[in-house]
Image: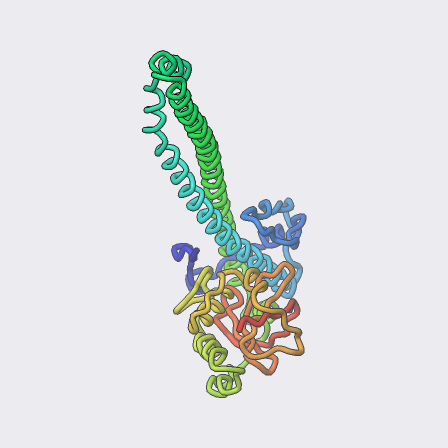
Length: 359
């Protein structure tokens, strides 16, 4: 299931103006019970954070920057929950579609018995047919022959009724399964909409708080959250050093996006979020990755930090909420957070969690 592009939006400091520093929500996120806990693997998202009454204002500019950076991390976790919820909704919708088709087939099988049931209903009872055979038979052998035929008809009728009973139970179960799957898909979609609304609200608050910081504080936040930006390596050299041509194509596609805006839910070609960028790069060679950093962290085979090769997926956080593409020499290309375009940074940004080799 692809992202709903209507929810994607570019970060624009100019559109925010000089908003006053409003850290109430940020502090609420940080102090809410379980706010740093693991995001569930189902559509359910954590409950809305409980904001403490009258939170104290940050004592210094450094404190403000620290709170904004922490809010950025929390926002990334929520963003990943939305990605996972989208995948879950797609799975539920697929299950509902399959269950609906199965129910329709079961109903058709059951309906196919209708003419035979109608014919049985119109025939005489077996006991009456047996008496008629006895009275009209020319000989004992004739009577036995007719009664044997009647026994075969009765056995066929009983077998048919047994088949109809089985088909009816199967149709009823299939219909119940289809209704349950449809209800689950509807509930998952409603939860996804709720999570999207929550992330949008957090995003707006984060951008306001970030815009109110000084330029130096903003730079500190981006370095804390995303790592220091480095000069992009020479793409031709990176491609030449790639283990194979497919990896080289992935790296070339990813590095070509350096400088593009971070867009929530973005999958390109001009704006990306983290898993949107990795998916876009791998799509260059026809490999489809799920639009979820956590889902991507379970693909391929695990790779130790010391065995990283260009093209490997590197992921971050516990639970996983971010992913990038290793380009070699301890660097990666990734789309990290609001306010920071696609960039090359060090892979060691504090919450490195592992790597996977897809190719």
